[in-house]
Length: 337
Ligand code: ATP
Ligand code: LTN
Image 1: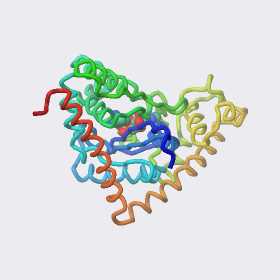
Image 2: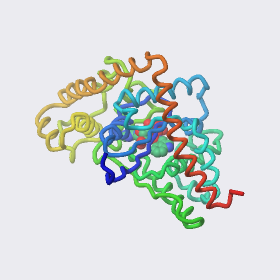
Image 3: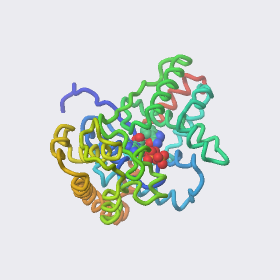
């Protein structure tokens, strides 16, 4: 082994175990993790504590099932446990502990400005403190692991910004403890829109409520076909990105990322063709992408003990890194005897 190999950068990201994991999550986040897996030292988390911030409809049995589903989907999508650490957030109590310590350096005004909090709380009768504090828990997730890069969809930009702000403020108050992380976003596909409503992003919660809003990674062939063939378009025949309506552009972007083509190639391919052709071809591309994922998913969930072993090993590796960070933080804050 060469001694002078450069240390790989650390990547950290996560998905909440609630709702329907959809093709937007795959394109914007999970497939980006898989593509870059060999370049980095990767840690992928199932952020169950974040799921508790919207407590409605979260029965304990549902959460338990969803945590396993997300973990199995990470693996089915191509996350390799030999190359990446996979673990469940609540299994490493340092996440909650660091959240408290970071709460004490985070001005309330920063949290009041968060757009996700504003939009989610507006729909709720009773707003939990956890929802307000969501960004601090996310900052704790990232900062615990000396993360360099956070690959996410572009709806998470404000969360990455506040993580940087919190880290900088902490370092200013207590000394250089945290590394300042950067977001990592796809150039194309960082925000997939709803198939039925291309003016809003495809979302897991809407996907559970409305048929044809999203394409779930575990959806049947029939549902996938139906959602794409009936996706909102317009009455023109415009397949150039610059002029296409939001619904058509969304289909072009999905086709582009899932086939690994360039925009020019996609435009040339669909030039002069109607939306029916675009939709039919996209159905095939999506099915070709999801078939092997669904097959692998079924194998994983049927293999007794496989998932538990991976999550257990992941927990141990995560715990080791996280506990070292917490010790360093406490030392700097004067929380040691
Ligand atoms: P919800 O909309 O119900 O809050 P979500 O679909 O955003 O849920 P998350 O678990 O919050 O799901 O997101 C997991 C990852 O997928 C994040 O990196 C997020 O940025 C990314 N992501 C979510 N929706 C999209 C989308 N429509 N396009 C691209 N990336 C997305
Ligand atoms: N807020 C993220 C989920 C999340 C996350 C993280 C992503 C929680 N902690 C740490 C990256 C890094 C979302 O997708 N809604």
